[in-house]
Image (cartoon, rainbow, N blue to C red; front, side):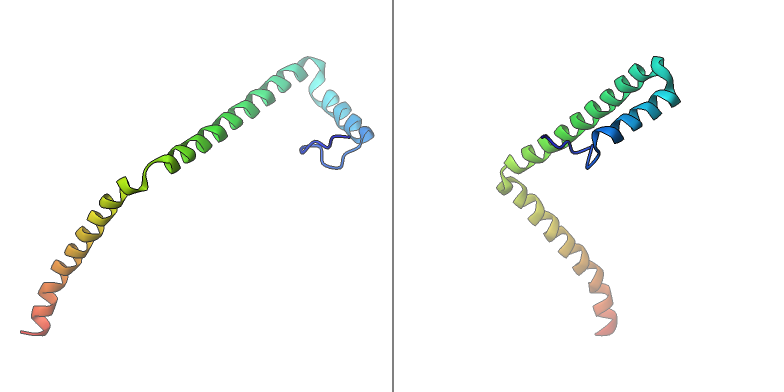
Length: 95
């Protein structure tokens, strides 16, 4: 017997009661609309999930050596900025 993720440990009787409650609250005419909206929402969620996974895979495929010089340049720039900021302070302390 296949156990569906969203059903958990629900048995046939419990699922039947849930379906009857849904039928009472929403009526027979609105159930197809609700099912369509639920299906559309699930599809959009899966599409977004696949899009994120694809972007991550493409990011991992890129050559990390291409990004290394950019990171090193940013580190050197930050170092130079900090050093130029401390030069006036060091001259004030040690005249």
